[in-house]
Length: 202
Image (cartoon, rainbow, N blue to C red; front, top):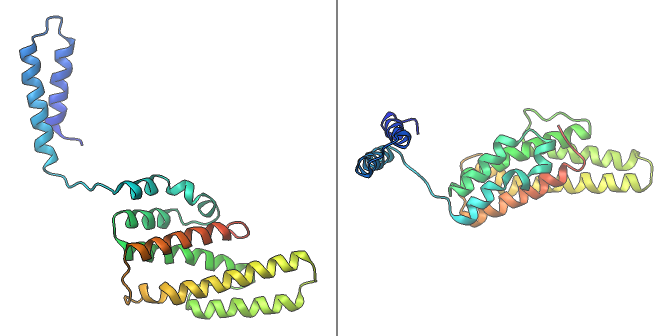
């Protein structure tokens, strides 16, 4: 806590332990001073206690998002999304999820030869789907084509789902979300980004 009063009380307690002759009355006085110093200092701070289940989610955030964090530069927003949810700032958690998804959308665009920078989500997703249609005609037949087409088609549809379900609303100050909605968005985003990381990265 970096408090001089507490540091002095600790030093006094340590000096008492170093004395050859120890008087328990001195220890009592030092302990009271130590307790009072902590009590006074704590009144200057505000503390928040996470609900137990959300606290565990916060402790496990890196493990739960490991694949996505390894593939995309989303560490800050992932922690912020989970922390905001744990703090019951549900709309903020959804907002950070949309920021996370933009990294995935950028990577998907690059994978089909596009650049996502200033376009609206709807525009770039439609462009991606157009590219996917071209690839469906041009790629040689076989299992690799089928797997790639399935991945690209499913990913682009998911982004439409995210856009119409949440992104348009939270980004334009038209949506507020409760705990259950935020939990759903957070889990869907985590699962989807971990899935994208199996084929895409930044």
